Length: 225
Image 1 (cartoon, rainbow, N blue to C red):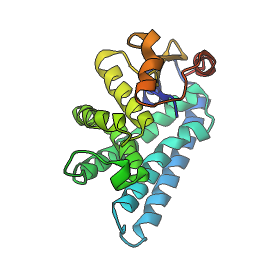
Image 2 (cartoon, helix red, strand yellow; image 1 turned 90 degrees about the vertical axis):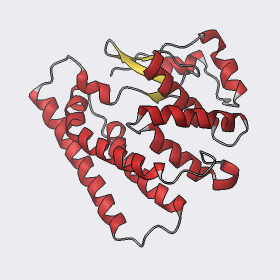
Image 3 (cartoon, helix red, strand yellow; image 1 turned 135 degrees about the vertical axis):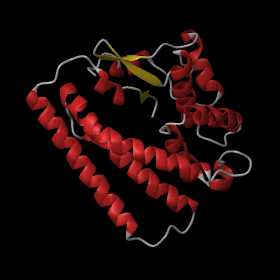
């Protein structure tokens, strides 16, 4: 993935009015998604306890993704999405808080997971939990731990770039690697970048080799949000 789209929950804050039909469709989609999440959690509760960290992480990430995937799978219009977010956001926030509290107790002594030692699935799934954590200070701390590991090939360069940009966009309003988009005036736009002419060089430096082609950006920019 080259872009992490920072628009999902901000949709709820839009000033546009929703029609009764859109609210009904959005609420129905969200309720259906919540039912799927609860069914998944119930199925997991009947499984034997996780055999190891990797298995526990996978179960948690399955739920993390299930509570989010509806926004893309349902194909909702913007008004529908606003209504859906109002319904699903509390469950999403609860899942994120629980995952954050749990993962903080599982970190290795040296601060973060390494691909060579812990495996790529552990490193990637832990990243997914951190990027959705409500603890902004902790996310920033983890980014600092990930940076030297990204340079050494011990974490995914894409994961590090996504996390770094998400943290810095929230803190400074600018990103470094060009992974984040925002909702601006009703359309998706690439978020402001620090020295945009150097973005590809910075991606290359961490071996995040997917080019930031203009054509790729045009495929994202301008979509309604």
